[in-house]
Image (cartoon, rainbow over all chains, first blue to last red):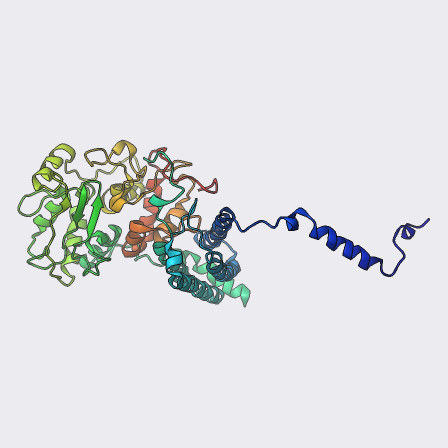
Length: 173
Length: 301
């Protein structure tokens, strides 16, 4: 007996299987109890997103400070940062300012200003991608600093300073 | 083409690393040297009231401390409201002994406790640079602090109890670079003023040198910059420290904030590369002190 004989012979079988799968999936727990958008989850996501921004900035820093032969990666990281700027704008649309977060409520009282600063980040990251492709070392350095300053301008207004951070250690000094 | 631009980039990496810095050789012109001293001191940015759009270095900036608010002074060469009438000796006495030309004591919010270690050369170059700037008229303001912390006599008493003018003394057992770094960190860049915890009298607790505090100037948290592995910057490389001081970006890619961002922007980023290396070498050598000020979110840095 060939193994083929174990398969359904009907031409409609694939459709039937597909339908059955859909029914099964629609009854799976994930669908039956679609989780409500949780504040905790929003905070966790936002923090991972911002850590990703830091990781790109840190990676660009490592390439430059150690003279790594990965110069083309600066372009890639800069492009990612440019994309992340849009993600940041979108991720902070939902107002969650309570709980373990360093986001200041001002993000939602001055949404236009916040959004503009994410667009500044996007513009500076885009410029870095262009300049990095050009290979002008001094210009790259200046642009990394300009991008870092864009991070700083937004953090100045919209991120809690270290002394107010939820990460402040209990004991202090 | 790609290969060539990558090679150009690589070749330029060393230059890039040093871009914001001045030439390594100290300039012979005292005014240019003085400017470099000012930059190594963080641009003396506490003397500019940025929030109030005050003129550069004309003072008037409120500096919040646990004892109340003090206002920085006018260090432009305006004769009536600034330091325009000061002699070289007046300037050196202020910086090294914390005394005004009339002999009264300055409050220790003015970090003469660090500047006391500066060389005559650096001090006079700094004065020459300050005197080359345009004068701005702005009266100094008395402190907005609680008695007795607002009394000049209290500042005298404080000095008598907590302060002895002293030059920086090089350690002959260490390298010239280490000594240069120690001089910059202790005296000119006055790192300890923010990064060292203070005792109840507001004097630096040197047993916890550079280990950070939650009660820094302007109420800011100043991180632990000793090489302690988990609570300080023990995992930073020398290159990380240099990069941070040039770019204002830490190894995690996060930006410097508050006063640190300000002193990088107005000063430290221009420190010559050799001096930044010296600072990194010295910082790696100070005793690590465990002092956790922030929880570590990623288990690294």
